[in-house]
Image 1 (tube, helix red, strand yellow):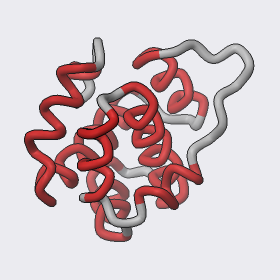
Image 2 (tube, helix red, strand yellow; image 1 turned 60 degrees about the horizontal axis):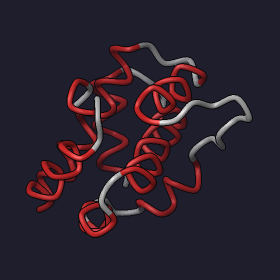
Image 3 (cartoon, helix red, strand yellow; image 1 turned 180 degrees about the vertical axis):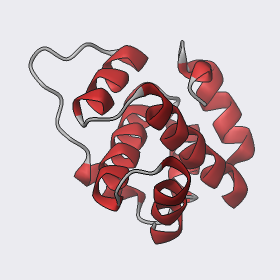
Length: 118
């Protein structure tokens, strides 16, 4: 987990706590919206994935779903679109580098609108 968070803080420029919450929110979103078998494979390639998901902010009462809902949650954490895209790209790139390339491709293809952020 530390390797991924360090990469995000260095490349995106956000603090470690925000990076952890953002990655957790992204992973929780993928777990909810993506194909279960492929997401499970991807999560296995991200050390500490369950701990990061536990750090994700809870959905609010007025939260929308899908990619827009994830964006709303991340913006609510004070992140801009560039930071959101940077965290998403680093997270997916990290999982891809750790053996989940095919799973990542299938997850991204299965969730409408996700490809524009990764």
